[in-house]
Image 1 (cartoon, rainbow, N blue to C red):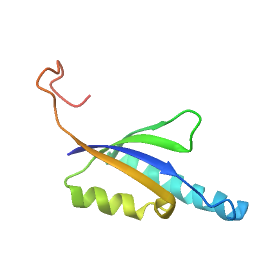
Image 2: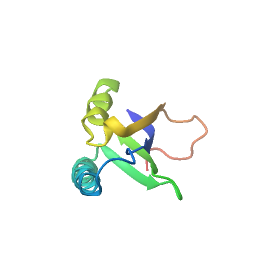
Image 3: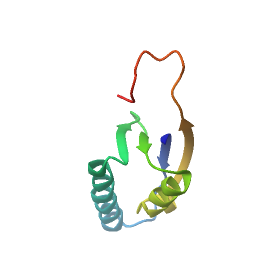
Length: 96
């Protein structure tokens, strides 16, 4: 199942810089593991914002929820999740 996920990150201004940097490093490593596994298919930054648009390829809504809630930055995110399916007018035979 494919999902379009927008992630908006809102770190508290009072968070010490060292804590924020450590949290971001942990998030980066985890997200790169998910990308290497094929579960996190695409990741794009939204210019000028601490936000991204991502595509996930997972077996179920439950799996997506588990992956997203395991993200180190999850407590500081607002998420918009949209399930995707192939459009009948698409000229592609696959999800490339």
